[in-house]
Image (cartoon, rainbow, N blue to C red; front, side, top):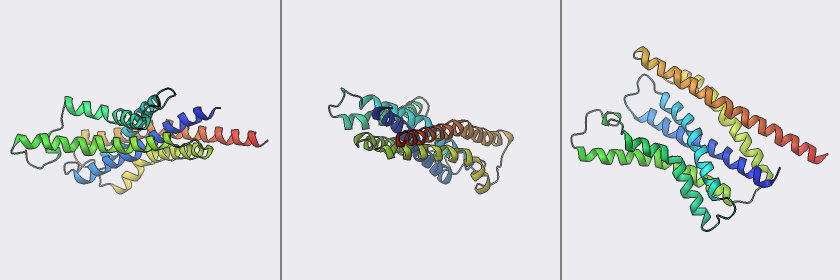
Length: 224
């Protein structure tokens, strides 16, 4: 397999891994700081981590389009910009179409509607733009450096670990988070968050494991 093909797969793997970490961190921050999640404290963390798989993959795909051959004029900034758009577009569109209620951020309704716009801007900057910037920066650094065979092993192993983490997240959360409270609908939301972690984590883990096995087999064959 050509180095270019390995490099493409590395970028996709790292995009997913960084997406899980960054958007998972945003979800964890939401779970810790927002006061109206007494019944599902861990759910924003799970939702953020699983969402990060999709957004990281979109950011990685966008960066690969720009870094392709023939698109090298100012390509580093182009990679960063398009990766940022890929990671933040869905959240930006969602915020524009339907903003969350002020109660998500304040115990009482906002006394002045002028503050609502500022609140939404802070929400976008912290929960949409910031993880997208981190993901785009990591992808830009990866596409800028020359390819090394070790990075394929490292990116595949990181992808495998990310998948295992998603699979274990419901069990870890059930041991650490407060007991689920509230009505059945809220409890069901916790169940669906766990199922989502498994549905996303299984293919991520298998992909990382299969790629690790293929890389190791290729290295063994090359030595022989």
